[in-house]
Length: 231
Image 1 (cartoon, rainbow, N blue to C red):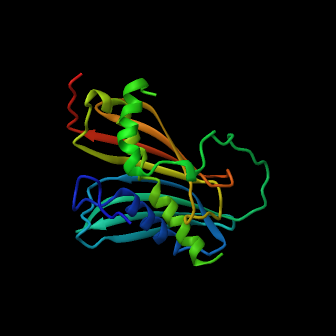
Image 2 (cartoon, rainbow, N blue to C red):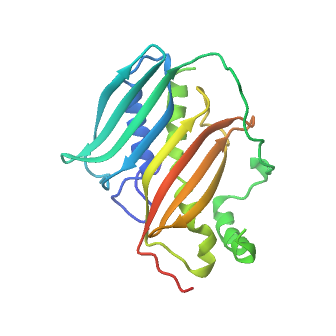
């Protein structure tokens, strides 16, 4: 797994901090309670070479819902905060979701090495039941920060629009399944809705499993530092 942010050998990858904070929070609740909503803020850079402490505060313990606040602390300073809401597993009531996008199967897809040069060409043309289940949940959470930020500025790469540093400010995830797998292919679809206000961008990402079930929805607010453009 990646532990540091792209372009840096010391700044921690945001998805790693997000997943570890979720694990710390879940360790304080009954196993019948599952996380369904997480909201976080990245306050300071986390140095991956230094120890990180996760402080969990019990905000509320109810019969059906409970809430935890997590602070990631490094060298005595709060670097990251997260609020997590847990809910007991209950029978489904109303159930619906958006239709599965029409995409090729994973067997037909290009590798990432083949994809990157192909993607730049395409853009230029159009701008167009055990502990394993718990670990799977953390891996899915870890992955929510992997591709969304880069999606924000991909349409602008054709104009040599490059951020020299790109990082998350606000990261939220809503989990739609109590059980999920992280050892099989998932479709991750990212959408950038707006890029404005001093290089800030809002993104939405969804993860869909091979059975076409929506696993999670993520929202990311990113900041791009020292962007240069030749447009």
